[in-house]
Amino acid sequence: MAEPGLAVTVTARTPSAAVVTDKAVTLLAWVLGLAAVALPMGILAFLAAHGARVLSWEFLTAGPAGFPLGAAGGIGPAILGTLALVGGGLLVALPLGIGGGIFLNEYAARSRWVPLVRFTAECLAGIPAVIYGLFGYSLLVVFFALKISLLAGAVTLGLVMFPIILIGTHESLLAVEWEYREAALALGVSRSYAIRRILLPKAWPGIAAVVVLAAGHAAGSAAPVMVTASTVLTRTGVTLDAPVMTLPTHLYHLIAEAVSFEHAYGTALVLVVGMLCGNALALPLRRRRH
Amino acid sequence: MSYASANTFFTPLHAAWRRRQWGELSLWTTTFATVVVGASTLFFIVGFIVAEAAPAVHDLSNLWGLLVAQPWEPFADPPRYGILHAWVSTLLVTVIALALAVPAALGVAVFAAEIAPAAVRNFLQPCLELLAGIPSVVYGFFGYVTLVPWFEARFGMATGESILVAALILAVMVLPFVASTAAEALRSVPGALREAAYALGVTRWHVISRVVMRRALPGIFSAVALGLARAIGEALAVLILAGNSTAVPESVLDRGQPITALILTELGEAGVGSEKYHALFAAGAMLMAVTVLINLLIWSLKRRLVRQHG
Image 1: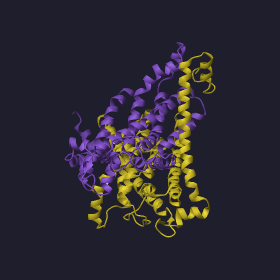
Image 2 (image 1 turned 90 degrees about the horizontal axis):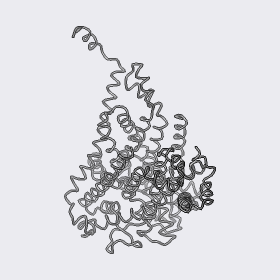
Image 3 (image 1 turned 120 degrees about the vertical axis):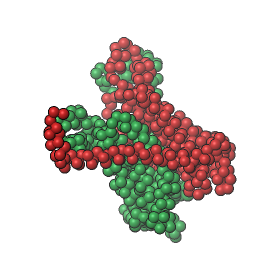
Image 4 (image 1 turned 180 degrees about the vertical axis):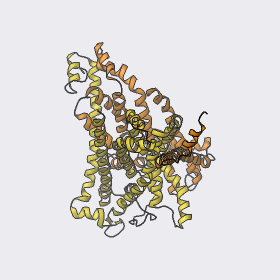
C-alpha cells in the first residue's frame, strides 16, 4: 500500500511474551478440544470395527448358547430384559418424578420445604448407583422377599431415575415464564387447567429430554441390577418374578468369565448404538426447547 | 405476584375445596401424594443404609478395626472384615483420575466456551454428551482390551489390571462431566466483563485467565466437585480394571479393589445380617456420606453464585 515501511516495522517487532503465551494457550485449547471430539469417535469406531462382524439378525434375537455360555448364540433376551427393566422403572419414576415436579413448582413454589426436597433429590441423584443396589438388595430382594427378579430390579432402577426426573421436571416448569400463569388466572381458569393445557405443554420438551437422559443412564448402569435383577441366562422369557438378562451385565459376564471377546464387542456396540439412538430421539425435543 | 404469594401450599387446596373444583382437588392431591411418597422414599433410602451400617460400627474400636486395623479376610478364622484396602484404592483411583481429568477438562471447557468457533462448538457438545453417555461397563471393557494388554507389554506386569489403568479410564469418564459443567460456568460470565477487559487491549488468554475464569471460579469448583462425586461412585469400570485384589495397594501399578467393586463382589455371598453384610453397608454408607458432603459443597457454591448474580 502507500506506506510499505509501516508494515515492515510492525511485522519486524518481536511479539511480546503475553502474545506468545496467548498463541500457545490457543493452540493447546484446540488440541484438547479436538481430542475431546476424537475420543468418543475413536471409541465408537473401535467398537464398530471389532463388533460389526458378529452383528446379525440372529445375534440380536437369539439367546446365548455354546460352551462356555455366551460363546455362541446371541443377546436377544438381554435386549428384552434391559427394555423391560427400564420400562418397569419408568412406571415407578415417571408418575413420582413428574407429579412431584408439578407440585414443587406449581403448588409449593414459595414453601420452605422446596429447597429441602430439591437438595435431597440432588444428593440422591448424585450418590453412586451401587448404593441403590445395596438398598434394593436388602429391602426388596431380601426383606420383601422379591428375590432376584425383574420386579426388584425395575423398582431399584425406578428409584435411580426418580430424582433425575424430579429435578428435570421442576427445572423445566421453572423455566416457563410466570406471565403464563398470571394470564391464565386472569382469564379465570383453574390452576389444574393451566397446568394441563399451558404449563405442561410448554415444559414438555425439557421434561422429555431429561426422561430420555435418565432412561439411557439406567439402561447402561449395571451396578444396581447386578445385585437385584440380573442373571446369566433366562430361558423362560420375561416375567416380573423371574430374573432377567440385561445388556450391561451380560457384557460384564462375557468379560469377567473370559467367555468370548467377539461377542463382548458385539454386545458393547449394541449397547452404545442403542444409547445413541435414544439420544437421537431426544434431539428434536431439545431443539424445540431452546 | 398474586399467583405465587399463596401463604402455604395448602391454600390452593382450601380454595378448590370451597369452590368444589374436583379436577383441581384431584390434581393437588395426587401431586401432593407423589411428593410425599417420593421425598420420604429418598429419606428412607439414606436412613436405611445408615441403619444397616450401624451394627458394623457400634463402638469406636470397632470403627477403627473396620476402617484401618483389620484386613479383609472373610475366610480366616475368625473372619475379619476391614475395608482399609477398599478406601485406599478408591482414594488412589479418584485422586489420580481427577489429577488427569481436571486440567484437560478445564482446557476443553475454555475451548468450548471462549475459543471454538460456533460450528466446532456445536459439534463438540454432542461429542461430550456421547462420551458422558457411554455406559461404565463399556468403558471397563474398552480399557480391558486396550490399556490392560498395553500395560502388560510395556511394564512386564503379570496382569495389567491395576490402580493406574482404572484411574486412566476413570479420567476419560469424568472428563465430559467436568468439561460441560465448567463450560457452562464460563459461558454464564456476563459479556460486558469480557468486553471491558478486551477494550484495555490485553490478549484473549489474559481476559480468560484473569477475568472470566476468576468470575466463574465457584462454578468451576462445583464442576470439579461433580467430577469427584462421579469418580468416587463409579463401579463397573473399576470393578473390571482395578484387579479386585483385597491387599492394600502400595503402588499405582498394584491391583486394588475400590469400595464400589468390593460391594458388588461380596454382596451376593454375604449372609443377610452377618458381620460381612453390615461391613459392606458401612462401606456403602461411607461412600454415601462423602457424596452427600460433596453435594452440600456444590449446593453452597451454587447459592453463592445466585447471590452474586442477583
